Length: 383
Image (tube, rainbow, N blue to C red; front, top):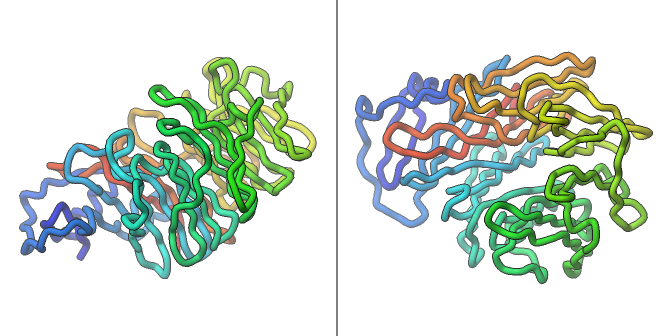
């Protein structure tokens, strides 16, 4: 039996209903009798269900949690994956008045991560990064909370001198004493700027680095970043010699960047668009190459597919939801997510040493519950 819990009432779902949920269909609860009500409690596990077995050819819904019972927009926005465990980061109401949420997959089980012991948390987790399995960092969009996993517990890390009311947009953990935080402005909040953790304290890095939105580290000496200049996301940066440098590769002229991923010093990817047409860029250690991409929407996420190619997230906004795949030979294909466009993969991560991948995102709530559920998707055989 699969379960969906809403507030203090628990409902039993037949496998057929769960399959419909995985397909993006929100079944009516009227045909399903509720079980006995459990006592109300502040820490009641929110609405959640795991999905049926994974599809061999598409992305399958594996877990969905609607943390609140109103018109909330629960989502997971980031994922960190290891060989035997994975972490999913987001919030109970993205863009609203929710709180950060973390879900862990370990030992073949779903484990909610309690954050209630950390005072003052609000907003949602905007980004996460792992230097190792026992050194994981996350940052909230608003509130300036930096969270750290030391292999045993999640705790609030030391705060820097960033101003209240500013926002963060990215984090890159290179080593325990080498973590970067980035915050560029949004529609309603100024950016917090760029900050560096040296193991003891946070130091603000000004100059051109102040416009960095997000970064990806292949090594301590190979950190790549994208950010703003002149009001647009048209700047590419690289950390070298202890300083940030802005680059302008001829092959990427006109690029407006939407993502950057450094897999190794000789395998770096950027996504974006040129004059409104989606493009990818690839750095092979010596130079950049501009590559065509299908569709009309720029990619917002990239991860390995375990076959020498890429998973590329570019949600079209209408029609069937899918994740694009680029083979090692440069051929493009699609892997379905759902018939419903509400069900989306928003971030992905390869399980090391396999061809399986985890996806973080959103799904439809059950009928009667507006908004969205925070969702975990999977491709292939997952731990």
